[in-house]
Image 1 (cartoon, helix red, strand yellow):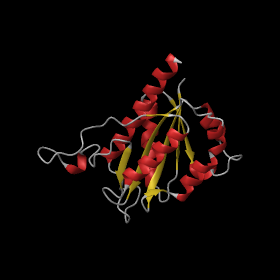
Image 2 (image 1 turned 30 degrees about the vertical axis):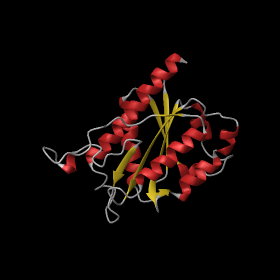
Image 3 (image 1 turned 60 degrees about the vertical axis):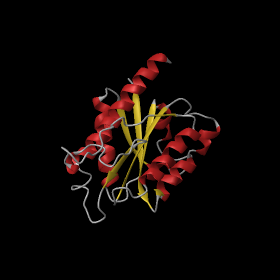
Length: 194
């Protein structure tokens, strides 16, 4: 069975909620999924690195803090340098997601950071392929998938004074599910051709 790992950091629970939705999408796409916290992967010789090694695809996630991925996520990225040195993730599929307290909030910078990490590892980046966005005529902003138009990965919104039970909204969670499903199906096709 195709295996997809999701490795993420969540400061207040919003990113974890989005990671869980993406995991639902991976399952919907017919793959086995493992949710891993970046907090458990900050040292190169400790943590569930074997799960990442066995995965056919890895989806990276971090909130956007001060215009980029969090320090905890960056510790994970730096801890992966031994893997990078031996190119052990080469040709695995990769994707990413982020969330911040504003509609934009420099999320594109974080998604770019996640894609760069994948590129450093010689991985192949998968986008969400949810192109709808928001249109003033006939759309309700609160129900539009990919409503803020992030195409490199999933970019969700959670006001800083909100609880994870309130945000992200269902359309953004569904955008995440679609990313997970797409990664799972792409990984299955990729592995059949290997």
